[in-house]
Every structure is written in structure tokens, then in C-alpha cells.
Length: 278
Image 1 (cartoon, rainbow, N blue to C red):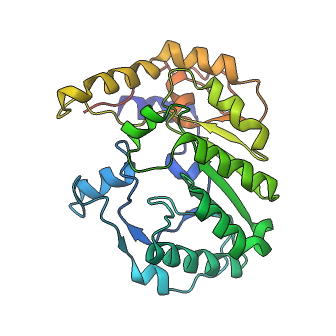
Image 2 (cartoon, rainbow, N blue to C red):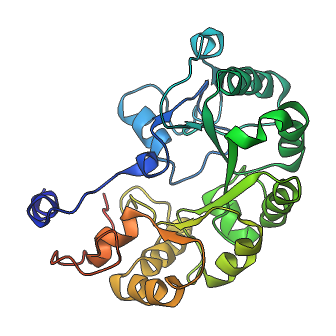
């Protein structure tokens, strides 16, 4: 609350979550097979009693979202934002029905995914005629598959994700990358790996909520390491090291913690020392 009052007094415009990227979100699945430990959508579903840790990965199609009509709306639509697009036939079909409706209505669509190569190739096969209105934003959070296996247990490995990026780039799609949250202590290696294949932007952000309670002893080291990633001094070093690289953008989750305005200048608000914990 104190930080919110400070931000208000400073006049800094803050934007949370997906609103930094799109004007509207569309989803057609409840739950997500990726089952990422840091997932904000999962946290909300648990909070409001819709899902549990054990049921989140058991996906359900939102039939009303699949059947509805999607008209052209101003701005850009992110699809999906609270789940992924998977190879499982019925779930992929549901996603493709919605994506087709969005594109055929003339919408600008940001397809966000921890990509799987067969799915990206299928999107190309079915929607290449709409490439001018479609941008891929691939979430690639680490170069280390062991790190990915812990935080994003059912998602694709690093090499498959970067191969998807190269493929979409070679097929002349608008491409961009989300490194949010960055999971490597220093994300520079990952940033440099994806920049050549990103036509638009490469976004860095932090994990917005890191629990302290209820963590199994065997997992404690992973949570300790991720907290060190986001210490204010370390974030400042990363910012200074990467800010001049082409296409690199820093999400509010980093700029707010460093007390920076939209132009990367100090705005008078004291930097935050850590991420929220519970």
C-alpha cells in the first residue's frame, strides 16, 4: 500500500501484467498443462476456489469462449494469456477455432506461448495468410533445462523454444520474446541468443510473487536462488548491462523496483528491495 501511494505521488504511470502488451486478453481453456510454479493465473484460480494445485494441470475447454463471435476491437488482443496452446487434439482445435475467429474479424493478435514446434508449424499452416495481423511472443525464461524443469515442469525445453523462434522468424512472422520471469541469475546469454530472431522486442521481467511458507525442504534451494536473482542491486546491474541492447524492454516489474520511469530515469521513488513474499 505504501508503494502504491508513492507511485501515485510520483505521477509514474504503472501498468500491470499483460496490459503492458495488449489491450485485451482472450482465453478458451481453464487450467494449464504446463503447471508453472509461478503462474499468476493458477494463483488466482486457487484464490477464488476454481482450481487447486492438484487440479490446475487438468484442463477444461471453455465452450462459451469457443462458440462465441469475436468482432474486431480496437488495439491488440493477447491470445492466450492464462493457458498455452498444446498438441492435444481437442485443446488445439479449440484454440485454433478461437484464433481463426479473432484473425478473420481483422483483429491484431499477439499469440503468447511457451512454444512447441509442431504447434507453431500448425499455426503457420493454418494462419499464414493472416501473418500481417499476427505476432508471436514466445516465452523463453532460461537456457538451462534443469531450471525450466523445476519452474515450468511440463513446458517445452529451451532448444525447442528457440527453434520455434527461428522457425517463425524464417517464415516472416513478427516475432518477440518474453523472458518473464527471467530464471537464470544473469539473463544476458539468453537475451543475446534470442535478439537475432526477434523482429519486435525482447521483454525482461521478474517473478511477481515468491512464497516463503509451505515450501518443501527439498525445493528450498530453488526459491533461495530465485530471490537472489531479484535483489535490487543485481537487478540494477542487469539493467545497466542490457539497457543499450537493441529491442530489449524492461517490464514495470523491474522498473518499479529500481525506481525508474518509462524513459529509464530515476523518478524519485525509492527502489524496492525485494519481491512480494507470502
